[in-house]
Structures are given as C-alpha cells and as structure tokens.
Image 1 (cartoon, rainbow, N blue to C red):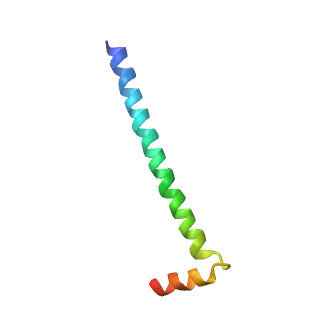
Image 2: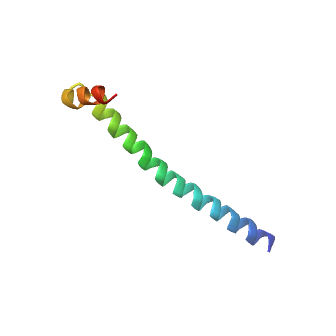
Length: 54
C-alpha cells in the first residue's frame, strides 16, 4: 500500500508540474512575442505607440 501511495503522489506531482509547464510556456511565449513587437526597429509605428502608452 505504501508503494502505491508513493507512486500516486509522484504522478500527481508530475501532473501538476506538466500543467505548470504548459501554462508557463504560454506566458513566456506571450512575453517573447510582446518584447519582439516592442523592440524590433522595423516595427517603428508599434514601438512609438508603445512608448506613448508608457
């Protein structure tokens, strides 16, 4: 029984870790996209709009 409890605990921890990875991946993806839009010089209009918003 103890081995079964340890295994189920490990699987729930792994499941939560993968869910966290999934959500954190989307957060990092959105951050990278916004930073690219704000800081690439070819997007000058968007960059100036961002500067005015700040």
